[in-house]
Length: 534
Image (cartoon, rainbow, N blue to C red; front, side, top):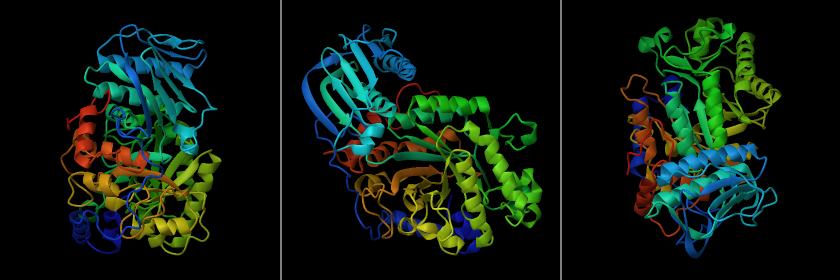
């Protein structure tokens, strides 16, 4: 969701808004902040192996573990999920080291020489890590004889395998791990990236690669914005405006809804979900309405505002809400994420109708077994937060539309996806058209930091974490998915570090940190994207 999308209806011109963001960018997002980036817990020690994000704790020991063709990844008997991870990890080790390793397997014994063991131990805990350690923490122990990875949950084991691969990537020989013990965990529960595929088609290979890349840097949330449309219709004619919905059902009732220039069928989506589950990344689907809904209006003109000459649903027509309920009922079984985002932003109709829709859709998604999430827009849509379903998870995307302090005061749980800090609109003259400000993010930002005096306390229990976003507003601009990757890649490591630890890497300035990121690259197994910053 971009601020420009509504100002063309309600106020200042795009150029006026752009000037404001240019001033923000020139000042490094200056303006009063309630607090600089502060670690939720002290960061890990200097001298630890090179990992991005940096390890939280490291105790060194003597010697190294050598990866050889005899090395084998093993898991406990009967753990099919860990065995699948072991197989994938073995392939990644081969790509990283150039060595063909033994086939992974199960073992019910103490580690043998040359083995890398992966195990989940729900009883494992860590006083400093607390709940975050229980959900995603890990212990990685390297000796000259063997390597063991243990975590209270599957995700922590995955993150430790990413650390192992990065240590090998950054080592001089590429096949040696320094002996020692690492204990690692994140500061925030959600660490993510949102990609607008509604306004621009991205290939399945690109999305698969981004699942792998996000996992490489321990991001755990990939939100896919599945529908949207051109901001300004050509010559005011909505019938000529670009729009798309990117899911293609084989049910005849939905024939014609999927975009002709590209969409994902159920088998393709299942492939995304399988890969994401393997890599401990959650796919958060977003289907946006009642604004940004031209794809639905074009499919069903009777539910559109102004007789269908709009990108808004007509919420005075009960058929509009009924249609969206049917849509979610049909597609929600595709989604394995516990959270489904239903948009609910920037609607220009009566506030009473909006509130009714907001609550009805939230209740419907809960009835489908999902946690509803929405874009924070109550500050500008009108009225107060009274009467709204407070169980909806709010995305704090704009201080003007609904800032984090108001969201927090009104009793919502929320995430930081602030537009002035975390939005990219590729090649636009607003919203970081050339990529985010990495130096500012590294030196000044953390998930609790918002511009213009809106920062919240570090570790606020209502703040789940942060995401950054790519919005493809410029639907007629000539660029492709690899150009988007080029804009995103430059701050992947920085954002990974700050979302994971809420602090810079210990003893490392921005330039040195970026050299570290470039050396580690994007990880193994990629189909489409490449490291362009090394």
